[in-house]
Structure formats: C-alpha cells, structure tokens
Length: 228
Image (cartoon, rainbow, N blue to C red; front, side, top):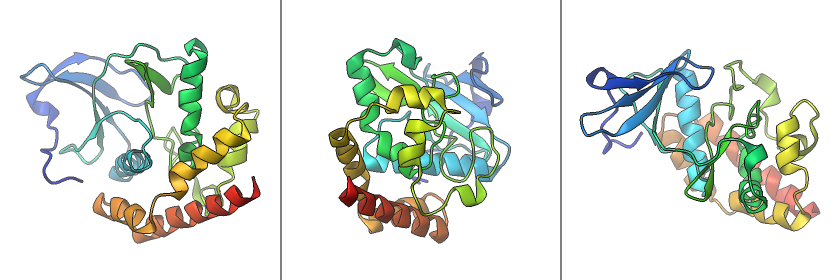
C-alpha cells in the first residue's frame, strides 16, 4: 500500500450510517466531515484481494471507488460518494456503453460479480460510470468462497460474462458488445506492461504467483484478440 497515505482508523470517527451490502459495514465521518464506507471482511486475505483488484482496475484505467488503506487488515475502506444511479436497469444507452468499455478489465480480473446480483454493482457519479465493488474479482467469489482452479490463466470470462444464464444482469449489460467494442476493451488490458502489473501487485501485498497469473491472463487475452 502507498506509504504516503495514512491508514484509516475508524475508532477516531463517528458512525453515521449502516451496512449497505452483504458484509458487515458502516458509514463513518471524520472530524472534517469526510465520509467513508468501511466494510469488514472475513480475513486479511479477502481484504488484500479486493484492494489488489481495485489497484489493477485503476492500472487499466477502469473507474472504481477510491480505495484507502486501513489500520485493520480485515477492513476495506472507500471514500464515500453520492450516487446518481445504482441500478443497471436505470442506465441510459450512453451509460451502458461507458460500462461496456471496461468489460475486458472485469474479464481479466475474473470479476464474476461485475454487474452485481441485482444489477447494482455499476453506478453513476456526475455522469461517470464506475464499478462499486470489486470483492468478486481475483481469488474469491463475491461472498468470500475461494475460486480455486476456476481462476486460472485462461480468460474464459470473455465469453462467460456475456452468455452465462446464471448471471442475467451481466448478460443484460455485456451481451450486445460489438466486435469493435470488444477489441478496444481488450486493448485496455493488453497495452499494460508486464512490469507494471508485477509492480502493482507486489507493492500492494500480492504474491509473485498472482503477478505471474495476471500476466499470463493478459497474454491469453492478447492471443484471443488476434482471433477476433
């Protein structure tokens, strides 16, 4: 984590709101009135996994919430924002296209929960579409179960996120991506250097094994790009 950023300590803050998702959480306000959404995950591994996923999204240029370090290794802290929309069904056509731009980043990070169980994992803030929770990316499912071998070096999510009948909101959001859009989206990942991927993962507490896997997944996407 960035050593220049002071880790968040909610013991010094006032709780001003309750849990919004499936994890124990709350909204906290510091002495300056800045609010944060703080959720507690089942282990430091789960928290580190989500923090790493957010950093990889940012590396690819995909908009996410502002993730901040916490003094509690089981906590995930994001800076609170007021959403204009939090339901894919309410998106305009231009907002849907914005969300589709980052399809390949969801696929690369194996974020099966990119659209959300109720279509509520994509939101709009001041006209910008962003992913609201990346806890379902990388090694763990949205509710914390490990993915195991299902998270490998082949990016099957490029197909699965567009046609898995068990993930209807993802289908609704991503199934009509054109070949040209898909090509452009994949390039947002394949243009990232191996060195940058490795640096972001290792500098934020991830393993070399994860770095090698994410590089291999990028290479798989490069291969698939040639076949489009």
